[in-house]
Length: 261
Image (cartoon, rainbow, N blue to C red):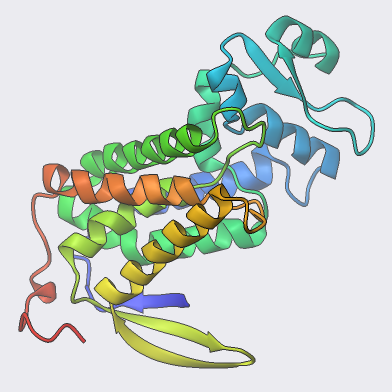
């Protein structure tokens, strides 16, 4: 299911939502060098600035990509890693922040930014730009924390805005459960457009993340490079924090309490 828009109008332009989207796009193309630099440059940026759980659980160690083509990721002491990489590497604490604004591909970036644009504008509207930035970053931190807890020795770089965006989704579902989300639904080779209540659309999305995360943890499915537990952590933080940050909600969300469909 792909969201296209919701029916909750914003009372003011969501400036910080736009700024965050722009920051992610600039990081992908200019900082990571997507479609501008070669693949080796892109991969090295992902390893250096992505959040690697192993580096967090092993203070003083860092991971790097050797120069050989198709070489595996190596993790060793920071001094040895920098000597072998031939450059100073980003400190681990910084990668926890930079990883929230990096992406593994164009679809990864586009999907996250679509969700952020549709649901972020109303959440920003409800709390103001300053509170929204703090709320967004806390969602990203919670996402990284849970992903770390579920695999502290993993050497796979975690990156993407999806954890922070999931925090926005968690806040949205509590504030606007009866909002209508225009959704593109694919059924095998066919598709249709439906209006779904946010509580169903986002609730179904969250249950999916829980299910796939559990299957991934049990090693019954390939992970496919998706950090499901980061999504769960971000969403949970949104549920827990929204009442502390939101000061108002759109009256357009009001209406008959039942039914929600």
